[in-house]
Length: 564
Ligand code: UDP
Image 1 (cartoon, rainbow, N blue to C red):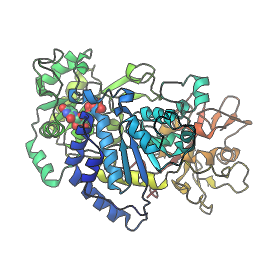
Image 2: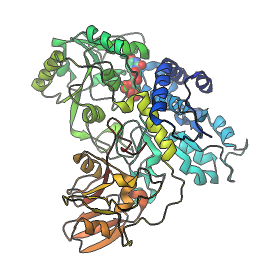
Image 3: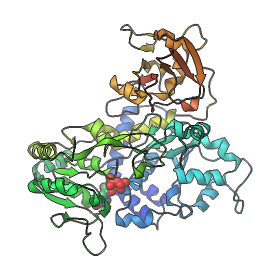
Image 4: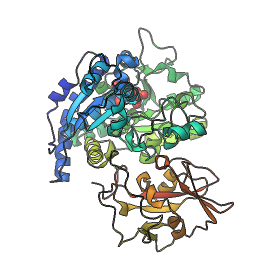
C-alpha cells in the first residue's frame, strides 16, 4: 500500500490517549505544531514528486512512560524534569503519522502485550508468533520489556526495532562479548543490534541513526517582529532545575553578566524563590512551552551554565533570534569524568555543553568561551550586545527536514535482510574502487557497478587512512565529509590497503572496533572480523584507521546527496 501524507492530526491526538501529565504535554505540543507539520508535508510531497512510499504498520512503545519501568518522568513534567524526551517523542509520533503510516501507541506493558498478541497470563510466551508490525519504535526500557515478554519472537523480530537513545550507543558497547571482554559493559549496551538501530537526539556518531526533533518555525512576519522587538540587554538562563545554579564559580561570570544585562530565569519552584537563584535574577518559574518561546523572542542572549547537556532549548533560542553563549569544557566531559555520562554506552567527549550548537551552527549564533577567563567572557558579552543576529533553524530540525530524514530511513533502512555475500574486495579480482588522482584517498571506480539497492549508494564512498590517534568521525569531518559505517565492509580487505599504498608487512583479522587499521610500528595491517564492530567512533594513538566517508546534504547530515 502507498503511504499518503496526512495533514489533519486530530486522529493522532486520539491515539495518544490521555491521563498522564507527560501525554498532556506532548499532545499540547502536537496540537500547537499542527499547521507547521501540514505545511512541511505539502512541501516534502512536492519535493519527492511521484516517488513510491510503502505504508508501514508501526508500533510505538514509549517504555519510560510505563508504570512497570517506574514512570519517573510524568510526575516531573510539571516540575521542569527532562522535557526534552517528551518533545522528541511527540515529534516522532507526529512524523510517523504525517508520513501516512499505520500507527499504534502503547505506554503500558498490558497494551504492549495485547498489541504483540501475547496471550494474557502468558508472561513469557515461548512461541514465535507473527508480528503484525513492520517497525517498532521504543527506548531502552521498552526493549527490555519486549525481550522479557516476546519469547523467541524477540530474537526473530528484533531487526524491526528502532531504539530512541538520546546520547547514542557506540558499537564497542553494543557487542556483548566484546564489551564484556574489553571493559565496555554498561547498564544499557550489549544488545547486539545493528548500531544504526539506535536513534539519537543529535547527530553524534554516524554509527547510530540521527532521529532529532523539531523546533517551532517562524514566518516572515514573526521574524520581522523579532528584529524590531529584541531587548539588547536581556538574557535568559538555560535550565529549569534549581540545581544548575549550584555551579562552582558562577558568581564571577554572573557578576560580569549582571553588569551588562537583565538576567531572566525559568527555574521551577514550589512556593518560595529557589535559594540557589540570586536575587538580581528575574525568575519566571517553569513556563508553559509557548510562553517560554515568547520570552526567547524578546531576549538577546540565551546563556548555558554547563548543564543540561544537549537539549532542545538552545536550538529554540537560536530559532527565536537569540545568541547562545556556552562554556567550553577543558578537559572535555565524558563517561570517564562526569557523573551524568557514567554508565552511558558511549566514550564521546563533549568540548562544550552543546557540541551540535558549537560545531554545526557556530558564530554569530553560538559563542563558546572559557567562563573562567573573565576577560574572554566579558568581551563576548559586549560583542554579542553589538551584533545583530537573525533567527536561524538548521533544516534538519525543521518539520520538513525531520519528515524527509525519517521518510528516507523508513524506505531504505533494512536490518532484517540476510547479510549479503562477502563484499567485493577481499578476493574479487576487480575491486570497486581506485586511488584518486591526487593519490590521497580511494574513491568508487566509475565503471564499477554499485551494489544494487545499497543505501546509501556506494558511489558516494571516499576512503582515507587517518592519522594516528584520529577517530573516523573526525577524520571524515576534516575532509568536509561524514563517516559512513555501512561502507566499512568495502574497505575491510588487503586490497584496500594495497590500493592506498599502505606498506603492510602482515595482515591479521581480529575483533576490534578500531579495525580496519594500520599500525606503524611493525607495519601491521588489521582487518575487522566482526561486522557489528565496525565503528566510526573510537581512536588510539597506536592505529591509523581506515575510514569510509561520504558527502551529505547541506543542513541534513544524515542523508547523502543521492540518498533521497
Ligand atoms: N521549556 C519549557 N518551559 C520552560 C523552559 C523550557 O517548556 O520554562 C521546554 C523547552 O521549550 C524545550 C524543553 O523544555 O523544548 C526541553 O528543554 P531542555 O533543553 O532544557 O532539555 P531537557 O533537559 O528538559 O531535556
